[in-house]
Image (cartoon, rainbow, N blue to C red; front, side, top):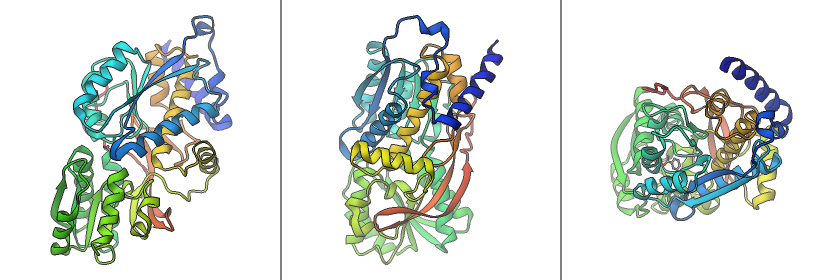
Length: 403
Ligand code: BEZ
């Protein structure tokens, strides 16, 4: 019975996604749910709307809503109620906030967070439960799609390993022999530095010093002085949002930009170049999005996002947009029955995103994107794709056992 359902839904989703960009999928309503109560679907959104990651939270939210609006504004024929909660920036409050979404607000889906440490804290509440389905639209914490993977946890973004692994290789390919790492000390920073260091050293490079900045501090002067004294061939960093703006500007102001090139996962410049100005020009990074992909899907997305928000999109808005697509696909397949856990999981774990602005990607067995990673260089404030870092890169998903 379940197998039959699985096959027909998969075919339906593929056809809808390929031909109509999912607009038709949103109107498909199986009879079993068409007559019942049509209360709004509740989506709990736990993202940062203040502090260094505010830009990320806003970009994700705007684009997720936009994607759903473009498909008719409903999920499986039902209206939507968003329960928006500011995750802030410390993991300590996250379990309580997640608990409230589940027990008091009784949301059907949770979307969030941005921060890898907050994701771990949320997992203490969400992972042991079978519902709601949890979609992570940014936080790359490797563990949640490795040893802590679970049937109802999905990610539409990346693991911290993916682009850092490619950025480490990029540095070695460019002839860099020695590097200093400099990042925020929390899960995203430690996992990205570990991945970048491993691929860089495997290719013959050497990390001579690791500098750790407490999150979310943006006082970089002491670290920049140490980098100047160490004189490595390059610096490998992860910062994002307001921290990336400050670090890249301080790096240039300290006179390091033209002496010691900066590399890293593309978060270093993503959504930040307007504020970074000349300090960002020429920086090479690796990421699953670029500003000049020039595909039909991306051009359509960029125009719609600009029209809706007045802003240029970034990778975070792409991840929000694809979160909207995932919700549309799943809810269309079950005719709006958010309690149809097994069927929703079936659809989500076999989903292929033909209309993603980042290029076609599909969900891995561990529920993380298998996606292209681009090499980009900042040119006149734009993230220009200058090469392919890795095609359809899949996280190793070490230790993931779906039960
Ligand atoms: C993270 O904490 O996982 C993260 C935050 C910002 C950008 C990328 C990753």
